[in-house]
Length: 270
Ligand SMILES: NC(=O)c1ccc[n+]([C@@H]2O[C@H](COP(=O)([O-])OP(=O)(O)OC[C@H]3O[C@@H](n4cnc5c(N)ncnc54)[C@H](OP(=O)(O)O)[C@@H]3O)[C@@H](O)[C@H]2O)c1
Image 1 (spheres, rainbow, N blue to C red):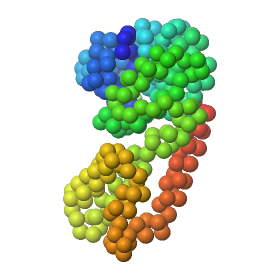
Image 2 (cartoon, protein in one colour):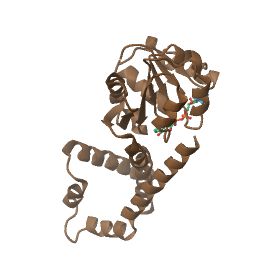
Image 3 (tube, helix red, strand yellow):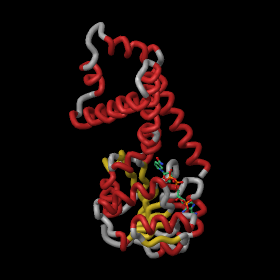
Image 4 (cartoon, rainbow, N blue to C red):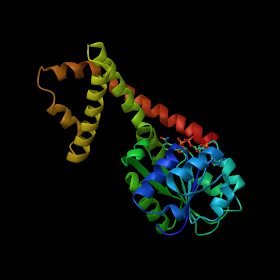
């Protein structure tokens, strides 16, 4: 990536992305400025990554070619208002704020910048994110390509029409939490039946990891992989019958629908 990058709001997500960018060397620390609210946080970021840091969003945005907005959605309107004069033509402005639409971003930024909306998830911390990108109407192809190049350093990237982003967020943005809940339940079940907590945790975590790799690396449909471990009249069939009776499919569908509704409420309120 050419030019200067400003990461505005370098918390959990901003730092996970920054780590990926630096590790893949798509930017050097000399070309990055990170902001945060607290002096102690910016000092920590400077120490850890060797990047320039400041609590002054206006200065960071003013001198950047690419601006990554990674503050919380409710903080974003204030940041955009404060930096209204600092945005300038030719910048690529990438937002990862959940629920904040491209229309809201372009309305808040008067300058003719290229706005790209991104949704990603926490496996970005281990370069296994699922990210989607959507451009504002008329966005420069170069801005889209830059964004994809950056996001590709932390995992998979797909272009999506904006009206699908909230659905992806409800499914894959929140998805790790759903899967972690299942892993917790597996661990508890193992402990109840006599395994130590360490044993049960190791078995459940490795099972999720291995199952994920099997799905990703073979490209086989999950129903076929499930059938492959389910012998007629066997123990897995007995277990699956209980999961179906417990309404797992309906619960997952309801969870994604509830997360989608909440994303839209939060987006509307930001
Ligand atoms: N976490 C996820 O799974 C996930 C997934 C997809 C998208 N996102 C999006 O990523 C964004 C950040 O989420 P997060 O989980 O990384 O939150 P977070 O850890 O709380 O990070 C927010 C950062 O913003 C900084 N900040 C607060 N007010 C600021 C201001 N006025 N100017 C500059 N920086 C300011 C905070 O600074 P201090 O550290 O000094 O307080 C903090 O470093 C959100 O918009 C969220 O929707 C998150």
